[in-house]
Image 1 (cartoon, rainbow, N blue to C red):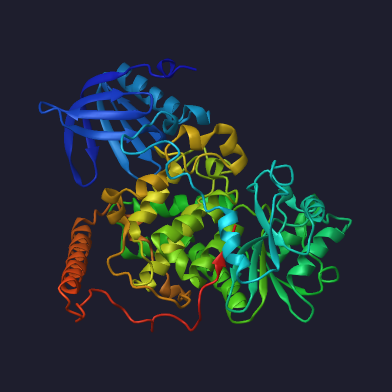
Image 2 (cartoon, helix red, strand yellow):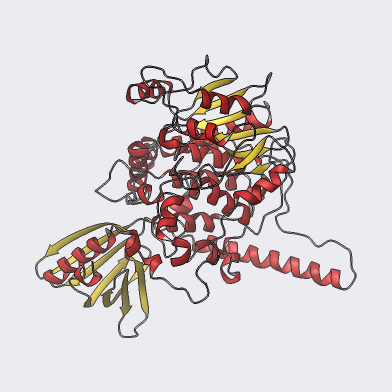
Amino acid sequence: MEFSELIKTATVEDVLLSRQGLPDVRGTLCITSHHLLLSSRPRGDLELWLLIRNVDAVEKRVCGSSGSITLRCKDLKVLQLEIPGTEECLNVASSIEALSSVDSVMMLYPFFHRPPSLRLRQGWHPCAPERLFQQLAAQTSRWRLSAVNRDFSACPSYPPAVIVPAAVADDTVAKAARFRQGGRFPVLSYFHAKNGTALLRSSQPLPGPKRRRCLEDEQLLGTVVAEGERGVIVDTRSAQAAKQARVSGGGTEPRSCYPRWQRLHRALERGRPLQESFARLVEACGEPAPSVERWLGRLESSRWLGHVKAALSTACLAAQCLDREGCSVLVHGAEGTDTTLLVTALAQLILQPACRTLEGFQALLEREWIQAGHPFQLRCARSAASPARGKREAPVFLLFLDCVWQLSRQFPFSLEFGEQLLLTLFDNAYASAYGTFLCNSEKERRLCRLRERTPSLWARLEQPEEKHKYLNPLYSHNPLPLWPCVQPQGIQLWHGFFLRWIRPCRHLDEAWEEMRRLVQGDKSSLEEGEGKGRAGPSPRLGHGTHAETGTGQGPGVGLG
């Protein structure tokens, strides 16, 4: 396929661009294989540079001899184009629809993007299990690095190297994989060094209606919890949904076969219910001048904040079992690629201070979302505005980012990164110039040779001129766990995301930049004083106490 076949009209003159909160601009519209450009007249300034993959829905309307196109983007931006000539209008709309729906991964912009400041392969250094295992080996000998999945035969959605109990051989692990949906056998996600407990993740077992057993799976989980210890299985489905899954071959771990494990059900929505909740909230946020009663009613009926509360509550449950109850935890739902990863990633953010740094958070995303097999290509294919919503799209990653924002709001000094990083991650998960979030698994990424053929988002974030944009000027290292308030009054709407194009936060951004400047000035003064031999402390903006957190002790080691 050639891109030229999809572009019916490449250039249109005298197009009027309208955007909320910005003045209208008239100029020349150009359509390329991956971008929509508009340069103003008569100055020729580039007013619009839109990645066409970002377009979620195209609404066209023809009136007389002209027409208008409304573009609803995946990042919730809304653009309106007034185009002279009905044929040109229809051709432009058709071209944008075709280019935004290209299915082939190899035809997406990251395979053509070559930023001058980055090299291919730069930044493609995932959090290697070998390096993490070295940290773990210094604390315990109960785990080992396994290459059972080196050719992706045991589990196509796992990375080649995983960490499993040391007492279990690879042939046992391979047989246990056949008893789990999609082959996602239990693997170590995080080791809590404070009391030696482990956080594992998997997919549901496959006992089916005949309640069949798998001795290898029972052995694998039996070695995680020693005699006299107990473990907790956090099932992210309702008890009823888990019971119904037996009809189609799924199910749960029966207590009689897993006597040291207690099962708890914490239902977390995914799939279509979560997608529809997202769409309802975006629609409510876009309604012009609603009454207070109508706004609160629509916010409540969207149920989005309820999903945020449920996710944080379940993550707190898992973290509490690890930290306060001294129990190892296995998290799974059905497939183990959505709400399972949501809970394990949030639990680590709550417990592990290293995950709250910019570098540590990137490593967390790499091992708990990207390498762990969250199907980004499927889940992020469409956003809130698309009329063609399928069963596979779901904003689970957005739900995770919203939960992280709730933590950053409740603990403003404890995360090294700010809201801008979370917004950037969402934008790049749905439409990106980088290959980091492409494909659905590590196996697919290797087949597409992403590391050799596309630039990495992590490399861009590490550029000095970019990195400072994402840092929190109020950050102060906090070694304690973060126990968030999950009561309804503690959960707030993420204004910076859901209202970022509707109510621009220019003054807030200016205040944020001023805080960065003041903090940088503080650090420079301190360094200058130290250079002259002065030992006196310099006042530091945002040096908060740790009274905002619960009790806790040192960090563990996050593992993939």
